[in-house]
Image (cartoon, rainbow, N blue to C red):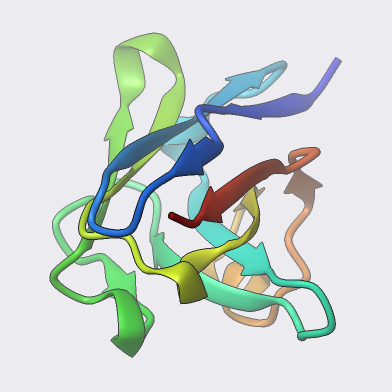
Length: 124
């Protein structure tokens, strides 16, 4: 069964950090383009970060998270991470990971596989 499962969300104070995990089963993440997306209440979903298969050194980031968030891949554990530092209240959202055989699926927001999402709340 093909599945993506996110974890690591929670409540954190402004300036804090969280690391989100996205574990894949039923397919090999290394062969897929990966993206992290988020959706805040009343707002459209936006792409936070992504990279192509086998291209972990050339990640793309939303301008508002550049320098604070880092996407990475652990091929041995078939897991992708999103390290989030210096969190701000405006980072509050449900975060989703997605996988697609081609980067176009991630860039268009029409990925083949999506996780169920994990809530991140940044508040004092």
